[in-house]
Image 1 (tube, rainbow, N blue to C red):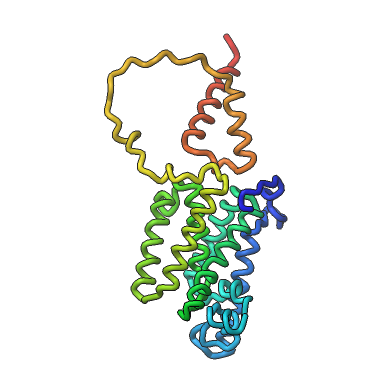
Image 2: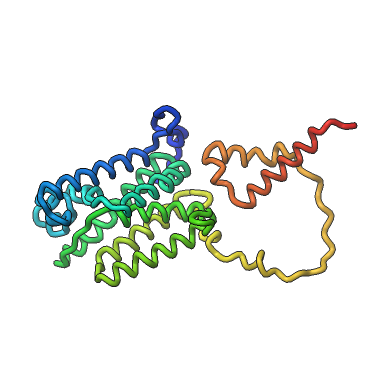
Amino acid sequence: MIAGRHSEDYSPIAWIGRMPIYATTLLVIAQVLGMIGTAVAMSLAGSPRPVDSPLLEPLIFSNLDILQNFKIWQFVTYAFVNEPSIWFAVEMWMLYAFGREVEKFLGRRSFLWLYLSLLLVGPVLLTALGLAHVPAGLIGSGTLHFAIFVAFVVIYPGAQIFFTIQAKWVAAILLGIYSLQFLAFHAWESLGVLWLQCACAVLMLRYSGATNASFDSWLPTLEDDVRPVRLVKRREEPEEADPYESIDPLLEKISRHGIGSLTKRERQRLEQARAALLEREKPSR
């Protein structure tokens, strides 16, 4: 399902002026509306926490409610119960910035399948624990949207963000901080959901047919960095290929997935072909 390719999936759903509207944009709007509704419900109930509000309690996931009272809507609604905070604003920025790139790469349908899978995998795990008479709950979308960021990192591990730090190291640092935070507060169910959602994102991208989703790009390139110097006679270069033919596959990839989908080596090939074309088109004297 996630590997399905449809050309219309790579285009925005609509435009508002010059602003493209993607499925990610609608998800951000839905999350913001959920946050506003949460704030209003907390205010009406006079409760400092969402779990203390009688208006929000039916929306927060509880595996006992699922098993005893069959409140199956909680499989979805828990993710839209978020307190207003600066961290929620950061979370929405990350969803919009990185989720949109994942959507552009996979296509809208595949991205929505990914989002739905990450949304449901946590409640499914906790419901299984409920069968063993282990009560557990879930509220908010923090780990869900962090897993979307992990999906972006799987596709573009070398992308530079946050003061030119590579995305893969940012993901590793945030995952470590998240895990230690849950560990410190003994939030074992949240810790399990976090790792399960991240693993789900990695595996779905790994086997989705996404061309850049390779673990090889996460490994240190020691061969390039510490390769010993050898005095070897270079082989005679083969006859130069037609630059038009060499860049056709790259141009097709850019048209489908955007220029950000090119690897470092493909960008170098594109630049070399461009230089060759410019040299060829110079008027002879």
